[in-house]
Length: 384
Ligand SMILES: Cc1cc2nc3c(=O)[nH]c(=O)nc-3n(C[C@H](O)[C@H](O)[C@H](O)COP(=O)(O)O)c2cc1C
Image (cartoon, rainbow, N blue to C red; front, side, top):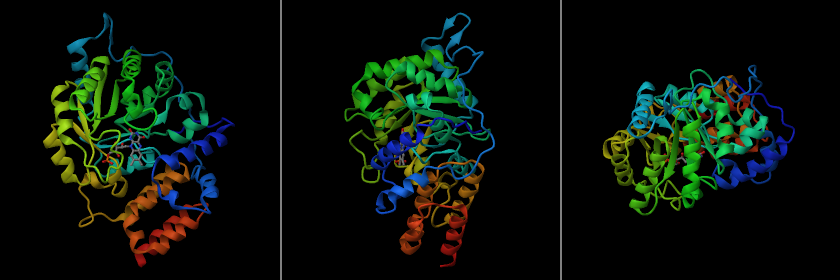
């Protein structure tokens, strides 16, 4: 399912936001110099045309909201039971694709699902722009029947704006998730707990699907616990905990604190997911055991090895070339901006590029990518 583009001001938006993205995330395009401007423009185009142009509209004939009953809203224990029955209905997914701007888009989610992921988050979507800009919706959010269970993540700083955006997608997902862990709208809201509470309450009382949150921990464990409990009391039905503080930015250097996640899991009554340091399937199993969490999210390692949850690794069954080819085929079927494809190709083929840097340089020289070039590149790498 693809949503209809039409806004004329998107070029301005895309350039502005792409620049922000390049600053915010360490992608391979950051290393480019003379080609970067042209590449950013070409990379913002969709990789192919699409046939389905239905746009996500706010639902009409709305069902009652998730916590609503004929006798009023559920409270206390009844909310917890509802949160669990929803999670159980979804099959209690354990291996989950974490939200990643520009990286957990539909083709990547579908690829990961094929290789063991049991649920997935969309990239973080900006709630105000999502409500206002057709083209942003069309490029940044696509989904399809197989793309479930699905968490659709938003960032927001205004409850009504968040609700307007969430209403457009509630029928396409299993949770609407609030990003409380990353960037200006995420981790920095940690200083504004009353605002966070109002965001959660607004969705919990008005959406037909449950609201989930993704947080980082505070340096102080008791602060983290108070925060998590506040979210549960406000109506959050599932909490994902990234076991690093907001100052611990480099996930490769700082180990996630699984002990803190275990303490949160023990204190809360809703399902809790653990995030941080899931690099192999054994990490996933150990994390589930050590934290008691109901599932795990993986981000960076999954980008390098989308078959991580199936237990594939460099010593065993993983064929990175094959994974890239599968991913490209999915992109032909479910179009995404070229910049996402470029980013995934760099990450999935990172090991091969380290051995054959001239192939990476050839890729970087392409200001306009084509599928033909990419399929040929994989063949070349295989033959080297
Ligand atoms: C490329 C990239 C993009 C990310 N974008 C988001 C995002 O949109 N929303 C979010 O909550 N976290 C985002 N994150 C953080 C991850 O979801 C995750 O919390 C973090 O990387 C720790 O997990 P890991 O140790 O498995 O990498 C992003 C991480 C990466 C690497």
